[in-house]
Image (cartoon, rainbow, N blue to C red; front, top):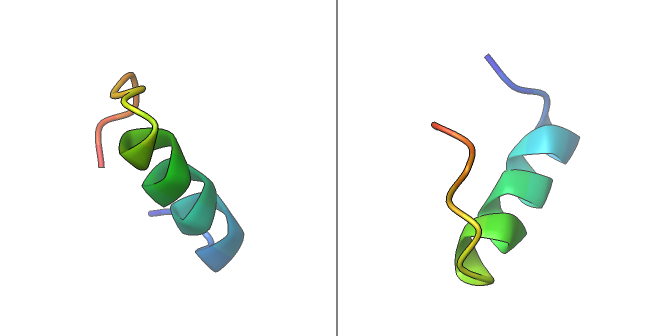
Length: 23
């Protein structure tokens, strides 16, 4: 589980093409 802040970071990371984190 991720905190809302982490989710936002992951969301932007994915949008930038950095799919290193598994959501």
